[in-house]
Length: 366
Ligand code: ADP
Ligand code: MG
Image (cartoon, rainbow, N blue to C red):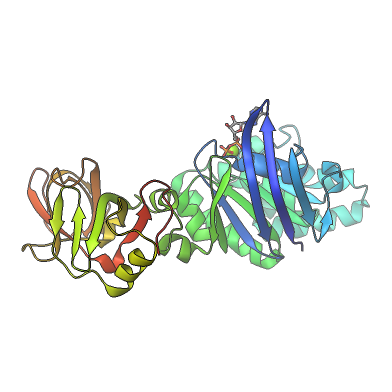
């Protein structure tokens, strides 16, 4: 049970700034996911919280108390890594008991806690085995068990599932969430996988180049991305971007082509207010919001299908629209439709589902 606050955290390594202006509050019992590309500073944030690195500036507060000066062992924080280091020569039972022996608990108490934890994680039948006799998923559970057994205030998890195969990862995702609700623990979970972030987080912190880009619920991160980076990073694949310009109430150009369409009033008024009329903007459209069509009504782009990826229930269609953008776009379609590589297509954009970003700064306009 704990609330964690990071206030204006900055971290530099040899004059290179890897974290800047990091302000995050994680509430008691919350499951917060930290997501970002590789090298964006996720592990460094966890290491700063755990006390394995000192921040160059800023405060770390646990339940309102500043803990910058506390040693890692005195912070009551447990960390689970991708490379779960179990002691190979010890049984599962001894691996689980190890942190409690360090705390000098009685052997009765240790046995009780080991049995409870093993039961919670479904590994009771493996207590006498050595780690090498377990599957990857079982080993990861033992590592989790070793973290939860001493009931710390806060759990830090650094990509704990990334060594598991896809199916097991999905299964462990659900199990971790169940475990979280039964422990009522505060968790900060790091991943580079945006699907993991969307499925697991109460809230998501999106990080890029050591700076927080957006903190919000998965729903809002997906549907109301705060900037072009978040829009492009979250989603599989992310938002498609088109160079665009709105010049009047009934004109928008997308790439080189201008379209006479009614701009929805709220969008037009906002562009007016923000001085964004006639300015270069980015029009962002999710792959599922690009629709195939037959007629040139509204904003319709002419393109060619380069590649079709079958995902079971849907196709990911990669297409180029040479007259409009030089980048390849992605369209999600029901796979019962018949679309072939090399064919010409028309694609319409509904501005109701579009996002508008400042081209220079990438900041959302709306
Ligand atoms: P992530 O976990 O998001 O992949 P990291 O937090 O591991 O990213 O790293 C962020 C940046 O900080 C990277 O550019 C990395 O090279 C750098 N970095 C991390 N630890 C150190 C260190 N001990 N010394 C120098 N640079 C480091
Ligand atoms: Mg990392």
